[in-house]
Length: 228
Image 1: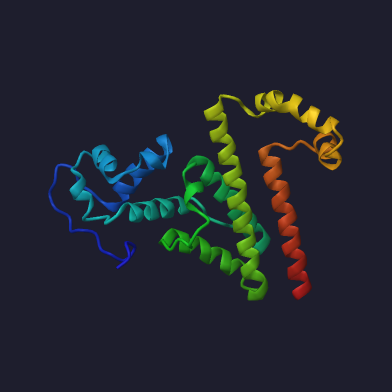
Image 2 (image 1 turned 90 degrees about the vertical axis):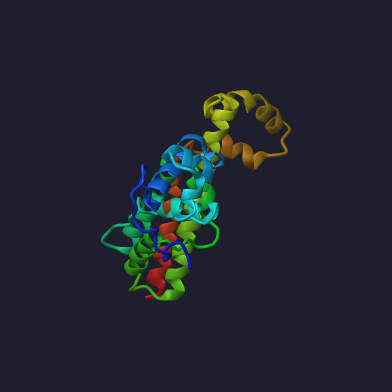
């Protein structure tokens, strides 16, 4: 029986009462502070002031704990809007915001579908918003938005981590490697790339995300209009 369907142990008097919600909140606190490597059933038990064995009545494995953590973050992702385009935009935006609050979340999305109740509720909201669009268009459209968001937030989180590891922000990194690029472009072997770097727009992360998402939604809208 999956963790979503398995009942919790009955309440009993204890110095430190437990629930899956309390366990998950403690695990998220550890991950937010120090990443997924800081999360273990032993460390969560220590935060809650209980022995590790008490957690096994609620959660059988670390994988179950990670599933519960992901679903708890999905409670923060509530796509809203009056049209399918607004809902897909909201899905992308709120997923990105959640990943910025919980960097580890970006490491756990993008594989097999998550099946927790909060995740399913978000999926229901998106599917309902696209209920008037034929499934042959709606299903790949939703998948495309999810893929765009996952790729974008992973790039952004990777950049954040690189800044912390290297001690250089984006401007400092560019200043360090700029001379190398100028020498490379001066060879004449990369004329198209040199034009992009020299003359292209230099957007920040928010602008890059919004612009790319807009292009994607424009393409979906054109396909929806063409199939109507």
